[in-house]
Amino acid sequence: MGLLTENNLQYYGGTQLFTQNANTQNFISTFDTELIFTTNDPTNTNYSLNNCELYQSADLGVTWTPYNTLANANYTATFNSLNSTITTNTAIAAGTWFMIQLRQAAIENNYGSYEYISINDIVNNYLVAYVGEGKLVPNVKRTDVIFHAKRGLQEFSYDTLKSIKSVELSIPSSLSLIIPQDYVNIVRLSWIDELGVQRIIYPANNLTTAPYSALSQDQSGFPIQDANSNNVEVPPTTIERWNDADTRKITGNYSWNAAYNTDAWLDGYPMLWQQAVGERYGLNPSTTQVNGWYLVDERRGTFNFSSNLAGRLIVLEYISDGLATDLETKVPKLAEDAMYAHINHSILASRINQPEYIVQRYKKERSAKLRNAKIRLSNIKLDQIVQVMRGKSKWIKN
Image (cartoon, rainbow, N blue to C red; front, side, top):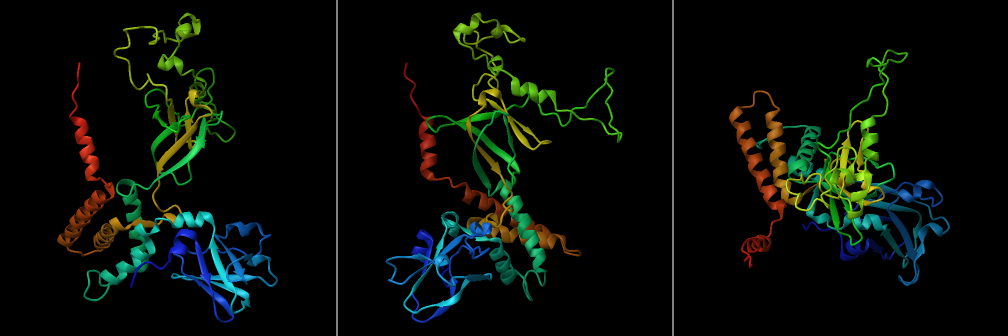
């Protein structure tokens, strides 16, 4: 049987039509997207959580009326692993068209979904293909397969699948942004200029640091304790100074007029490279740039930025583990075989009295299929390689 269950109208428009010839109360959705139903009352605050709307038409689709505005228009929704069923309070008369319309966010989430396979399908396929009498795994609990599948998705997300997410933010006057809820590791931070071009923001590295804690001290330098005998913590002065810092004193990016300004020669930063013609050799590239810096404060869960980035529009790219939401728990089909190999090895390696040569065999198979998945997902095209190689052969004319 074919794997596509949606027609073109469902996929592109998020619309499923029902043109029944008899009175009907049950309407089965065949969307790849599972319908989300919280309440049928439009005045309820949770109504906005529904991912679809219902309409009906009495003139063969010429005009559509929201089903919620009609008398006795209550409805319920039931779900199973294959489809969602809408059940209306009263039967829809024969000859009346009925429509399920996905909201825009649900439509966009469905685009490109065919390139992925869900964790649920991975588990079901594995149980059919590998578990049973005369098969590789005679018996195993479904919960064990789910656990190893999720662990595999996490590990693959870090190095192979690269579940990179991006979010557009503006840097406030506090120069601090909260780390996203599903953040695992950073990929890149950049600010966007007036032309939409991204400018890379570099990590502060050795320029400054974010202390894990700062202790209140007495005049002798001893930490002060509170009534519960715990050290009293205060806001780190290091971060305050970093937020207040004039980045021009780090980069040396002063104008010619600033050469005669006393501020340009303070705090041990006398080398103004825009004035010191011929003396720019040997400068540290990590400091002689104007894109700014960021600092990850793990203790407070924030990104801190240099003062020249206040008010900038930035894009944060980061890695998640692919398990934060149900929508993310899916695997690219190009890595499906590697996922089965990972589950095989994980189950066999966790069993006692399992011959070591069998464990090593499936460990090698997992590594080989994971390597194949990386090559497939790298998406390197021949014309891109040719373009790079052509750039290597240039004539430099004097």
